[in-house]
Figure (cartoon, rainbow, N blue to C red):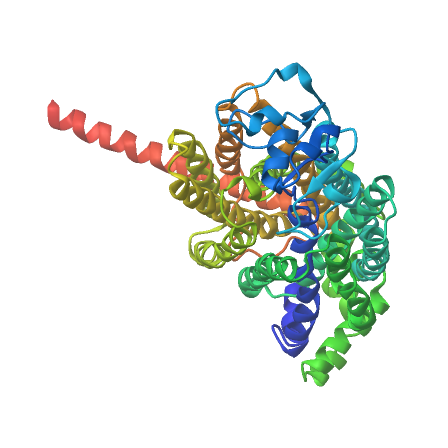
Length: 558
């Protein structure tokens, strides 16, 4: 009897699974808020140097504000106020319509600070700490530091969850998220803000990975696809929720607090979470596993079936799986055997590519030429049809074909956008939205695919490393835009080329549609051997048929 049969015995997809999944899905709402938060908290408001009146300003007592800006701030090539320079002395002659230019050497940096337009944003970290002009790179650095936290969290907390349990790491991550997110809202300076954002990223990675395993390991095989799809929709709703919160809360500190404080509430009800019975069995805690299974049976109104599960029954039914388990597993187990090694390298490339291109699109909202709040809603809303389609294709066509198809489509669309004229902004935005939808669908697919490909002892570690590669992609992604300063065509080619390559690599992964979760590394290796043997037999049969046809044709010819 495998664990899947035990799960059916205690109720299958019953009341416990519904409540458990719902309580685990709610915190995912605010994951998107933190990942994309800097689109709003680090938005760049309109700005220019603070102006000062020259002594001869008394000659123009009735000067208007636009005129004052005209004589104090030079214009750029697009006839807009320079953001980082001002005239050393007010150029009063520019009020004469016949004068259009002055000597550019008569300008200086913004020695007295900047004036920020507060029409759209009351306050951002940009305006609070003057992260403009020569300090503008600190804006991207803040996001990269946050992504570094997510990366470290995936490496550290992913392994700890396999050692100490999914439930314990989820509860700790909620606590860390609430505390460090709140501290970031009250940061007195840029350095402390980055430090707390780093810790927030670690916490987000910790509970994100643990929640995925807690959900998947309690769901029967036939319901995994729809469950992961509904969980993914929670992240989609979170993107739209972020747009609404940012529109209502224009001050970055209050917005940061608004998306962090709810984790205190999640922490309060996290006591209800039940540890993964699969993990308890694999870690040698059979007595606790029996208690957990009986609790699930009771909630699912299967008390009699639960009462029949004892430690002896559990150990005998899982004897094969337990006999092949080591006492501890490390990341080296992901490359120790051939099948797991192939899965590891393929998934690493897919995770990196999807995240790299995804964040290249979603963290550049101010450059779409429309309302930042509207484009955030559109980018979030496109996930609904995308994830509906990917749920259908994963359920009926398979995970591998779905992942490959969405990656190839996303890459092709992004590269196609390179050939659309800049004047056709609507078409360019529409293509970017479709590309983002395909990447979101690919994210959904690779998330489920990863949990199904890795066996229970290294599932969290494998998912953690996949998330690590995704965060590396998220960190590197903003740097690619720097290439656009030298070669404008390079960023779209890189953003589109990587998903195409990843789509081809995804073809090497084994299909997992309607296949039970593997409980041991040996399960994965044996499954791969059976598939290889079956393919060899099919090839041999085809050769025999071709040889027979050749003989028949030869006789007919003779």
